[in-house]
Length: 137
Image (cartoon, rainbow, N blue to C red; front, side, top):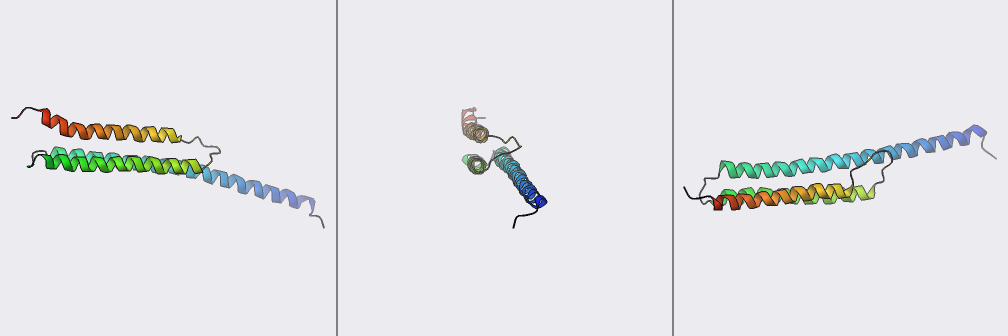
């Protein structure tokens, strides 16, 4: 027995609506992934800031390497956060397909993380090098 004419149209319409909702959900997940990536970048930058704060506040401690080591430890934590965040965000982005949204590309996430890693390494080097090159008081 065949379905009445309006019944198949309704089933197709419901299927179309379900597919559209799934597409929107995937786009929301892509945007949430980008917000999470940005959150981890902020967390890494906060770790860099804490490291700089330790070095500035406790720079006169003895032995002189102790505040530098503390600052460098926080900067290394930041570098690990930057690296892990870009790896996770790029992996999620590869698994999802965008429909209406325009997501940040994986390469862009890698470049942002690489820039912050390079700046953090330079900052750690400057903490050790600048104090060593200053003349004794």
